[in-house]
Length: 182
Image (cartoon, rainbow, N blue to C red; front, side, top):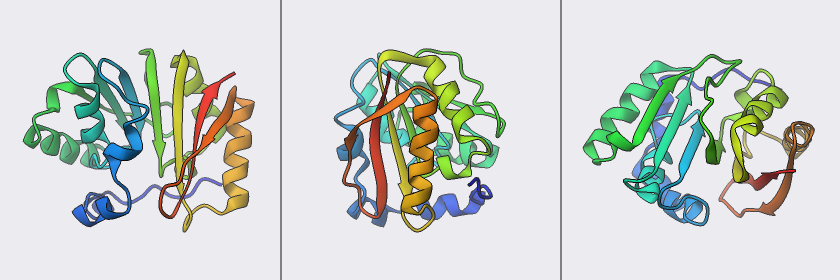
């Protein structure tokens, strides 16, 4: 199911202010990311969700972002500096097969990226190994890239790694769930 990685230059389209009209990151993340938490975002692109997550976790929290593309992370950090939250964000280059994070996390954002993972079950296994017992995973996939059947395969792989769906979210043009460890 893994497809090629989104080209880095598409990241500029993904941070368009127009996107906020149908995907408000503060509204989507607000129920899950709170002051003092550690949030991990897999494949953050140029920070459409990262920067709002940093604002939500505040000075006592932090956001760890991992991406296979250094160019995405460099633009993300320039934007974070502009918005005054760069000190809250730990941006790391990772490999396609290893997110390279051992820090315990409260929330993991897997937004529009699971379909790019070469091994979805391994990805969720890595997330499961660092997610706190009361942690949550927000899994979001674009309908135009991921069919309902493929999304179900992703959910099955997440279940095999130790997760269960506890909530279905209504995000425009997205298949979206909240999962917790079992």
